[in-house]
Amino acid sequence: MFSQLHAAATQLNQIIVGKPVQIRQALVCALAGGHLLIEDIPGVGKTTLAHALAITLGLQYNRMQFTSDLLPADVLGISIFERDKNSFLFHPGPIFTQVLLVDEINRATPKTQSALLEAMEERQVTAEGATRALPQPFFVLATQNPNYQIGTYPLPESQLDRFLMCISLGYPDAAAERALLMGEDRRTMLQSIPKVMQAAELIKAQHAIKQIYCSPPLLDYLQRLLHATRNNGLFTEGLSPRAGLALLQAARAWAALEGRDHIVPEDVQSVFIPVAAHRLQATHITPGNSLSSSDLLYKLQKQVAV
Image 1 (cartoon, rainbow, N blue to C red):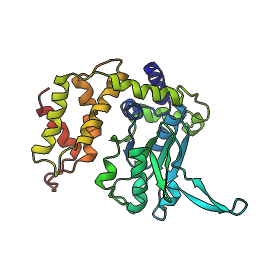
Image 2 (cartoon, helix red, strand yellow; image 1 turned 45 degrees about the vertical axis):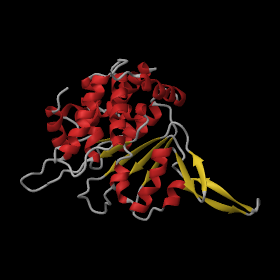
Image 3 (cartoon, rainbow, N blue to C red; image 1 turned 60 degrees about the horizontal axis):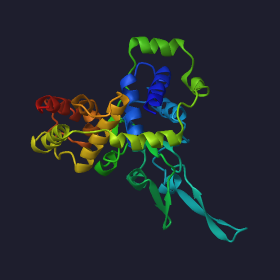
Image 4 (cartoon, one colour; image 1 turned 90 degrees about the horizontal axis):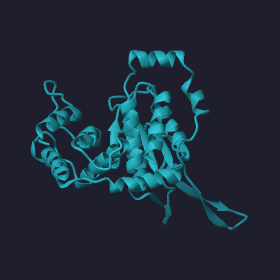
């Protein structure tokens, strides 16, 4: 089943050229049953990646554009009175899908952002007093504009913590950009790419990675990384136990994509920064000390013994 994921990566690399690491990270999130946040400027392929990922994995796909006037009911759904039946009928919102692309999540108000919390954690929504299960698998891929852009509402820590990873696509290199300029339109390509997997196969793979073995020494290493974020004074608060579970699950998924049935230190190191950086806030950011959480974590990782 993991060979199908390699085929999925190959197909996605034909659509999103020059970004093999980010595509691997997106597949890790899907395989680990987590959610993905992509923070970047408009126009670098975030939406195309989400749509291509849904098609390739054979999943139902919905897209929502978050705006400042969006309401929670626009996300979750609403009950409407049906005169013929003399009763209210619930009309599910776009969140009832398998892959939900939330475009520009930080342009919506905190009230609307919070409508996603239960769905991302519990795979269910509670609307108008009733709890309804979401389709499985359920995967949120959200895009976010940099916070310096006008009209954005920074995501609270509780919301950020629900995302397994936060990544950035960045500008393509010269060769990848030339391929984009000379090649077929990517939106047109999406209309013809085949499914590589089915939803049931992805669910089976998600269950299978739970059997990826993590030895006690590897758990010791993972715990040393967690403790280092809590005790070195670089961050206002360290990584939570939920972040530790997310790091372990992401490392298992990375190992599976590498074809191993056990975790090695390189698996933990490959996912540590994208799993941890968005969950941490540097203690002091000044004009003379403007290192990001990612920069600090990179240095921290070098200091923690394997």
